Structures are given as structure tokens and as C-alpha cells.
Amino acid sequence: MISLVLAAQAAQGGGGFGGMIFMLVAIFVIMYFFMVRPQQKRQKKIREFQNSLQEGSRVVTGGGIYGTVRRIDQAKNTIDVEVAHGVVITVDKGSVFQDTTQRQTNA
Image (cartoon, rainbow, N blue to C red):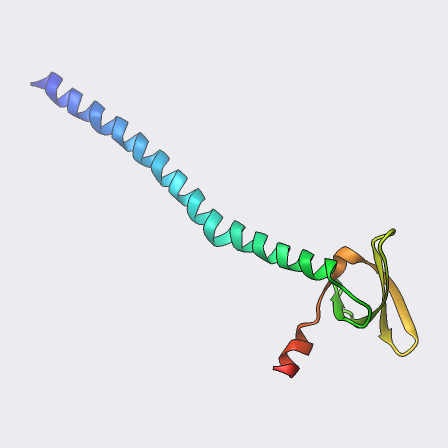
């Protein structure tokens, strides 16, 4: 009788460990679909925008400076952005994002 009880407890302990592993895997799958995958989609959209930049495009730098693209230097991977009349700054192409205020006013 005692050996039967011990066998039942051992079986429950083994199932608990498998259930714990299943829960950990489920948590990682949920994190992937709710956190990692949407972030990858946003990064892809930003890269596509940066690669399709043209002179005259309205942009926002990573520092929050709004301006207009005046020149794109593919060799150095930089962009000249006019932030005020006659004031042009050079920024890295990777730190330029789409001007969302322009889309809101046109809609």
C-alpha cells in the first residue's frame, strides 16, 4: 500500500516538471508574438522608409529635430537635413524617421 502511494507521488512529481517546462515554452511563445515580432515589423518599416528617402522628404531625427531632406550621401550613409531656412545639418541615415505630423495634416 505504501509503495502504491509512493509510486503515485513520483508520477505526479514527474508530470509537474513537464507542466512547468510547457508553461515556460508557452510564455516564450507569447512573448515572441506580442513583443518581438511587432518590434521586428516596425524596424522593417523604418528601414524601408530610410532606404526610400528622397530630397524634399519631411523627416524627424532621432533627437526630435524636424526638417526637410536636402541631400543624400549614399557613400557616407548620411543625410543633409534643412531644419530652418538656410540651416542644414548632417545626420546619419539610421537616425532619421518619418515625419508623422505631415501624414496627420493631410488626412
